[in-house]
Amino acid sequence: MSEPLKPPLRPGTIAVTAGRPAHDPDSPLNAPITMASTYVAGGDTEYGRYGNPTWAAFEEALGALEGGRCLAFSTGLAAVSTLLDLVGQGKKVVAPRHAYNGSVMQLADLEARGRITAELVDITDTEAVVKACADAALVWVESPTNPALEVADLPAIIAAGHEAGAYVVVDNTFATPLLQQPLGLDADVVLHSATKFISGHSDVLLGAVVTRDDELYRVLKNRRDMVGATPGTLEAWLALRGLRTLHVRLERAQANAQELVRRMEGHPAIGEVRYPGFGAMVCVVLAEGATAADLLTRKTSLWVHATSLGGVESTFERRRRWKSEPATIPDGLVRMSVGIEDVDDLWDDLAAALDDLTV
Image (cartoon, rainbow, N blue to C red; front, side, top):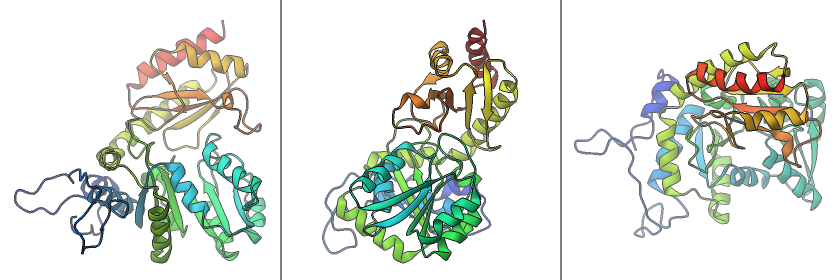
């Protein structure tokens, strides 16, 4: 890999340059795809479950952006599972009541089997969250939350978690390291579903964690090696290629989101627009509830009805169509992942569908 990047390189430059091979004559400009399950003995890797140069390139780049050491995983949920394995038998996890559905379902499964206790909190009620942290072993934070787009007081919650002796994990999937760097606020671990904005093209399943704690990194790597939650080589290469354009993709998608929010506010079909002020995720609550929300997702031609997010294309869905989504999420809430298309085309498609709902 190339020499470690030194400040004051800015995030966009880091996204483009980190994790590349050294600039030697005739060396490839991009990290090559290394398809190997077996290595010649006597080195540091030995076997394909323990490492791969292509993973390492991706990990170097994302680690540089987040300000720590990165480990890639086969999926975001594999990373979630590995982090939850840090929690001792019967210990308490504090987590948002509104969070990525897979994370909440894993917590529920572990609690049902007597492995942990989970306390789900309103992440916007900082006083209540701080109180809940008092006897926690792990504090799990999303900000903004999925799908409610609530913003947490990260410094206060991280401080409360550490005062209790807990690890603090921040899922940074929605904000990305370009808009928020939780390790700089003293979080222990940052989590990404790299399937989403990091890779950005709806063609990869990948997860990642980043930490500044060398001992915690070692524990997490050993756990990844042991359970085999390792990424595919092609997936890591595609994610790194996607990461190279994260800054330009996010800049365009965020500008689109802000303009769409401006245009949607006050539309008679929409009862509420939720937007934290940054990023490319928006939620609307349809005035006529679930039926109108379902109709909206079927009436567009440009917006795609899909459950994932963070790609170059604009997608949306009514989240309560999933039975596991909390009842505190409104029936008519539509989560919108704004892409990089022309904003006027996005609005024309969306406005026509919204107008149909008010006829």
